[in-house]
Image (cartoon, rainbow, N blue to C red; front, side):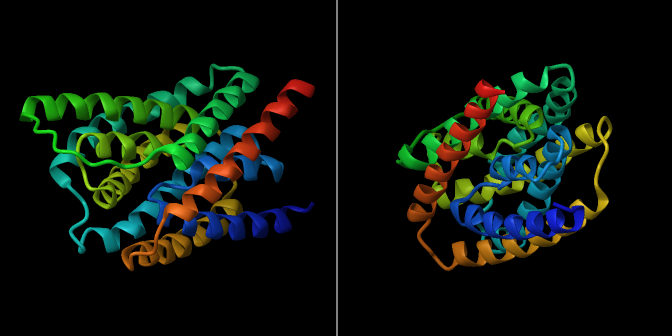
Length: 253
């Protein structure tokens, strides 16, 4: 496959998955990375590109979420600050891990994300937290999401959303607040990755266009109360298939 065809396919797939995953309330990086690998793109370049696409998609999604009052800024700041600081650390540390180990870690994250999509059910409840406890929880969630997101190139939204729902947030506000956080954590992770790997300018251009268009369409569909339950089930099954395929290739090669 020539580079031009690969870039066109990458842009088209980015548009589709960004649209459906914005409806589901998370960034698309974790499903785009295996697609980029299948197109012959190097692992670290794929991770760096996916992180930038996450930041772009969530920025344009937030252009709808913020005016709609869906972003809880008070809860977002502690998570955002710690995640943004630790995301580059995760990105830099990934360079010192063997590629097969990184791929196995990514398979594990895909299984986690797929299970969350299929089996996690949001049950908001009242949890009254003091300012200190709220900041402490935010630091733990942000640190975990930031480091793992930078290490694997996934942004960490899959970790933040269930944590916010568990803390008592309305699921839709949890998704929108996570989108705001992921802008900054993904961008800092991208900068960490980009400082140590080469980037493909044409790949970035095609996929950025797909990501922006997909996030605008997906956020519009989400705001119009389109149900995300079926979307999550489909994505969960796809993730299990991708994880199984990646694991099989790691075992047999």
